[in-house]
Amino acid sequence: MYRVVNKQALVKRLFIYFLPLLLIGVLVGAPFLLLFLGSFSLLIWHYHQLYRLSDWLLNQRSFNPPEGEGAWEQVFEGIYHLQHRNRKKRNELADLIRRFRDGAEAVPDAVVVLQNDLSIVWCNQLALKVLGLQWPTDHGQRLDNLIREPKFAKYMHKGEFDDALELDNGHSIEQVLEFRVMPYASTQLMVVVRDVTRLKQLEQMRKDFVANVSHELRTPLTVVTGYLEMMDGDMMPPPAMWNKAQNTMLEQCKRMDSLVSQLLSLSRIEGARRQDNDKAINVPQLLGYIHTEANSINQDKGHELIFDIDKTLDIKGSEDELRSAFSNLVFNAIHYTKPGGKVEVCWQRKNNKACFSVTDNGDGIAPEHINRLTERFYRVDKARSRTTGGSGLGLAITKHVLTRHDSKLNIRSEVNKGSCFSFEFSIDKIVSLTK
Image (cartoon, rainbow, N blue to C red; front, side, top):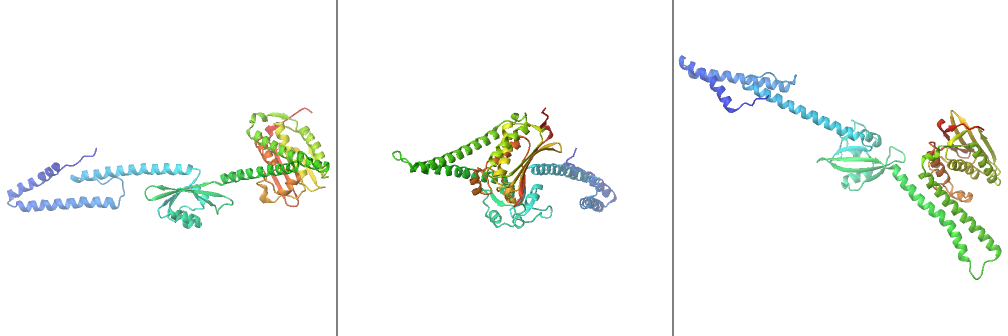
């Protein structure tokens, strides 16, 4: 345990040191000379101890200080205990910083710590990926010099961080980043960057959905309302005009009924339980029914329809939902392929998987549209879709059906050459039925 040296002990040591010198000096008749020599020796000894301490502090080759003597023993021991406490506190602080950094690395957002002058103090690994920073090269660099965006520089220099800033990320295509800045410590700022691309897409899809469904319902309602306003209770229109009006209103009402039915079907599929998807389905028979319906729809188109069906390949799932998925792809190929085209439907076992595909030689789809085809009401050619009676919900329904059956829709298309819509089911979905 560290011993504290008090004044009484120091005085006692000096008294014990000088008293013998004084007595011997009196005996030999030279007390002042002996006291001077004793003081000079004591001064040299203290300077020697001071040199040892200075040498150890400047050229510290060991954590432990040198052995002390006399009063210097407590000095060296006190320095040792002080250094030991400081090292313990540094280790605790390093452990705290390490836990903070581990926590910051676990955060699903990019985190950058800045000085008030916007120079970078630290950032996590996600910030390197999202913002394109380089560590430790960018340490001490100003963040507004690395993110070359006037809107960002203005936001940071203004210093009003109550509202978040949204920017398009120049390092990634069609990515939107949200910047939030918070005071950190007394002279620092913490910037949290979050990828809100998906949220923006969902928000845009919601806006598009409301706009499209409103437009889809408004068009037939306008037609029906227009004809009804032309009619007078006392005087009905001529039979020829009435027949035309009646057929038009009936057609538009069927269109609205189909749209509402598809919306309800989509809502039902999204909310249904997966337990309904484990019944054995005779897929070849189901595709036979669809083949019959396709021939009826194809009378005006005159396409060459080819159905290549494995009669022994059945799967587990929801029959109503899968019928919707199969038929949507087949009927879409018939509707959107120019008259006299070719449509091939294939249901075969490939690589221990049940594979379904619909291939046509129609106009094809441009690459920028493919990723959005399964959005509700999204259509490549709205005018042509209305002519063919499409609502833009078929592929959205198909996507949700396949997701519920642990599959996904694959789309390959080339402009002016045709398209192929396909999906597959894993081996655990395949069942064997006695034919």
